[in-house]
Image (cartoon, rainbow, N blue to C red; front, side):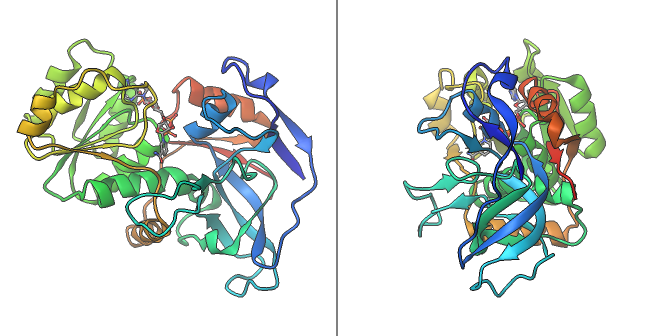
Length: 340
Ligand SMILES: NC(=O)c1ccc[n+]([C@@H]2O[C@H](COP(=O)([O-])OP(=O)(O)OC[C@H]3O[C@@H](n4cnc5c(N)ncnc54)[C@H](OP(=O)(O)O)[C@@H]3O)[C@@H](O)[C@H]2O)c1
């Protein structure tokens, strides 16, 4: 099979030195596993962090990719709940453990250390495989797992969103943020966004957001205070950095800030007086349990949710796809396409 193989980590300005397309043997499966023929796989920022060597314990060579959609091509003899040809996606976590509130120490994400979905075939344990809602095509289905799960848990499990909430979603163009936008709108909340691109703010408004502010503006905090009329009940943030203290400033009494990522690194100075006086909840969230995943798929099915797809690239053009994400050009999920 053909696979996009990461053989070394290094400089983000030259992914071509780090990856190559290789002919490798398709994985063999055990009795409890299935072999999935991947039709589409979507990118997550995690793939870039790994290529750049930003994670510990990186195992090389490896096939990245936490999100894939395809069909069951072969199944082990103990697998009774699927037939070959079933259209499926994959729950991208393993070893979550028994506590719903947080994952085990040996928790893993598909696509490093185990080989992932940037290949024509992928083997996984059958318990991680799910049929996807029928209204989705393979491209849309491949967008869901990691980003959708992260957004779903952040909004529904952690922030406990209600339809009376004003929700701020930061960096709306990102994969997780675009799912958070979609889910929060379906939940009936009023949604506000930030972005580094005025065009992306316009797009978020065209999708149903009330308004947005460009975080590159020197006065972004006051601009957000104006458009939200000083009411922000939930912040869903994956960027962190110096902006984080601004979210504490902006939050209404009793608000919840969910942090699912730190693209910009450590938070700036936090005014703890505001944290305790306003009785804020600052909540961390990472991906989700298998129950969260099932609930997300049911939610998507009930509401006929269609994820925001930025662009689809033939898998051989993976470098263009990675560069698009590196340069924050996307609005929504970037998807690779393999031969059907
Ligand atoms: N904890 C978890 O389970 C989990 C799961 C998924 C992702 N993450 C982490 O969350 C982050 C986002 O992941 P992703 O896959 O959604 O990445 P992505 O698709 O590459 O999105 C990143 C987005 O960050 C936004 N951004 C850049 N500077 C910003 C700023 N100053 N303020 C607000 N937003 C800013 C940009 O939005 P605009 O283009 O709109 O400016 C960009 O599109 C990454 O750090 C990732 O590692 C964590």
